[in-house]
Length: 130
Figure 1: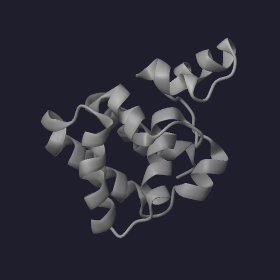
Figure 2: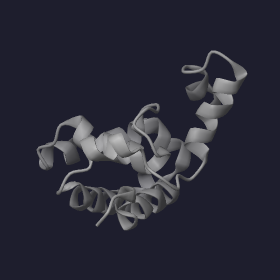
Figure 3: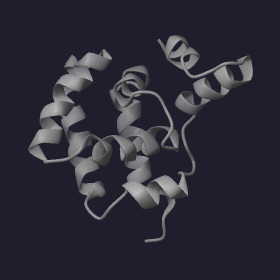
Figure 4: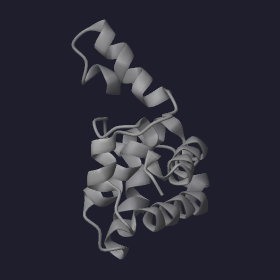
């Protein structure tokens, strides 16, 4: 799955390697432009609630479509637009705003690694000054 997902965005072997590393490497810093644009005052609370949702459903989450089934009602409940949730998650998981589908990334990483990366981004305040 990771290779297929990465091949879609790569035209060379170097680009393929970079695409795979973007998903498999834990980010230690976050894209400044993306965090300024997508990480707002209420983002941390939303992400904390999403992490809780993942925890509550972890036994039934395996494929990208499983994550989609729980995420769409979450977005409706919080009256969000997709980028309000997905861009902060994408930044937390990969460090940047340019990456494959969030559902696919989460399915590749799994619930525990996804929660760990989101919580790490929250704890680091996405690299922004407090």
